[in-house]
Image 1: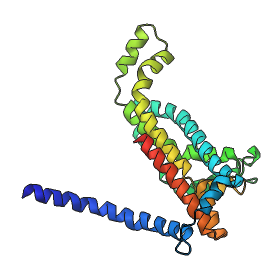
Image 2: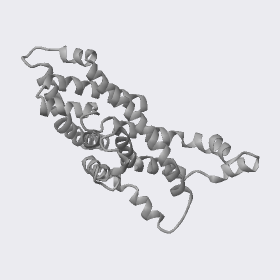
Image 3: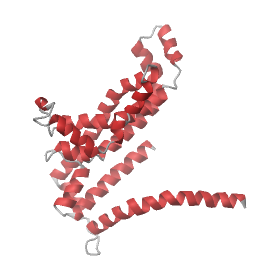
Image 4: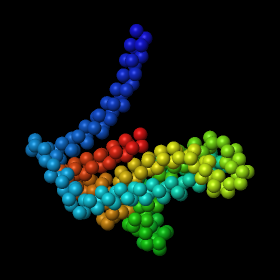
Amino acid sequence: MDRHRAALARAALLAVPVAFVAVFFAYPVATIVGRGLWPDGHLDLEPLGKVATDAELREVVWFTLWQAALSTVLTVLVALPGAYVLARYDFPGRRLLWAAVTVPFVLPTVVVGSAFRGLLEDDGPLGALGLEQSLAAILIAHVFFNYAVVVRTVGGLWSHLDPRQEEAARVLGASRWQAFRAVTLPALRPAIAAAASIVFLFTFTSFGVILILGGPRYATLETEIYRQTAQLLNLPLAAALTLVQLAAVAVLLAVTA
């Protein structure tokens, strides 16, 4: 009887998130895709073919991939020193700084994009740099937004590593870099891989930052779906792009699982 009640309790707890995902994610996506690819009750795969054959759409897919990869690499490189400092050093205000690092990540992407646009526009404080509506602006905003993911994920593991192992390598004649590469980096690899996967997922599906800082020159799958839906009212093509994005995200999740 107790096992039966426990099984029912677990099923009830599982039903809540499943119902939430079904109502607020699966149903809207399925409805949009259905209206796009089954416009008259018959399956129409021509929009998917257009995604594969149209040069502009292929460029959108390619830009989405490589800007996400570049954003991920830059974020990891910029955030690793911060993770090291917060994990290895104890100083006044450390806990406050640790919490403050998270603030950019919880901001809406539209707010982040608008803030960077205000800084980089011609009459803004950094307007002289000429980065308004540029790839550099997108990458900088992505690094700023996702910095906390790497710092907290990698720094959390780094703070639990025994520093004596690296010190032993130094005593045996290894340089600081050799000790880090041979001892610390292998231990940090799972955390770095996990953080990089999350950052790639966020930058691959980036919307607000691309829409505000990219302008008409730069478009990702997210912004192109919005344009096809809200501006051009082309639901079939928007549905096809949605399927492409979902497939890419599913592959990424499967690889990193």
